[in-house]
Length: 263
Length: 263
Image 1 (tube, rainbow over the protein chains, first blue to last red):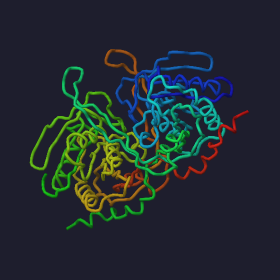
Image 2: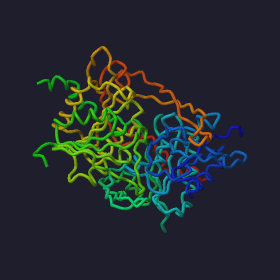
Image 3: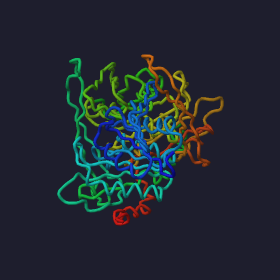
Image 4: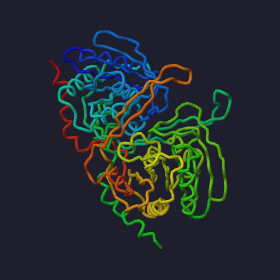
């Protein structure tokens, strides 16, 4: 190992060639020993999917002092699991995922491979951060994020995160105005309205292609979506306990459900 | 349409031939107009994955009065999206998913394609229930669930669910003792400890296969895992808002993050 440096595992869902993971890996190198395990292919919108067939590989593609890089043919969550259950000899101190090309604010977090990787690490008790930029362009400019990413990461390395909580950090697209600051946010209410179109598949057969429109349904100024629209960085503390705690009481009607319907 | 009968969309992640979806579809038919959109292949552990390539198809395989059945080559969430954005002429009144061959209690909900389908419907404002049996056997006995599934579904059709909440219902495996009742639960704390093993892929190359052990880390008697272990049906009200609300306050340290690290 390399002295007392923290061990940082870097992954993403846009593939190993993506500009976003190149930037994130470069920003992590001064902060610790870095192991990158990126996806071989684009795995956007693969959610918390894992590979259960015997097909997974992870190839070492680069090795330097304090830095190793692997490419894995699985999903982002596979990258995390293989990372510390197979490739590393100890649990990482931190998992960072991204920088995603595209926003994972609002309900996008549910579909996101980038955030699934962070959530997976969080489920294993490892501090984790997902970073995403509100811009899908493969050539997007990430340079305005450097100071934020370094400062957030250093803070998490030093102070840690609460048990069961990881961070969903989204950045506004670069504009002429500098970023106005960072806001602690809740996940905005929004949804995708899909519109499928009929098209041809590779063999000339008829198939459907997903399109859609993101519809914002929240008037709050405390949401991640609002923050991005107003040129702030959004930070949402994110959990994997899906229990709708405030609705537990109202569910008790189901406890006597068989009696209610006996006639 | 068929009078005032509710429109019920049925899906799953175990494929169209699974015994679980056959049972669920049969139980729904007396309750409404039923449209089944099952996955063509086994899509277990595909989480909230969606298909963004132009490859999706949904084939009508059966049509009777008040009943239609499609097979879709995508994920469970694709089935839901295609269901009401392409195949149906109105939103369903209810989505039911399952009956899954295997428990989706505790953190299994995060990986589950069955529950992802229910959560997707919930995100679109549609009442939704995921049903799962704590038994992976393809020939599992589902007959002890009939009364529960009918009663829960009838109740949801009549009284509805709170906005942003769907139900994760898990059933104990059939045993000699009858089910003791239904418990309202929170999602148990637990995790998978993976163990990869080296194996050969189809072409004789070296690859990794996922194995693992489910480790329960919760001593509460109010969890879904506890309920199943004690021969109760578990019902967890489940939400897609991942904001760790109780930790919003403690995150404010990040708001001044750039100032903190300027030197």
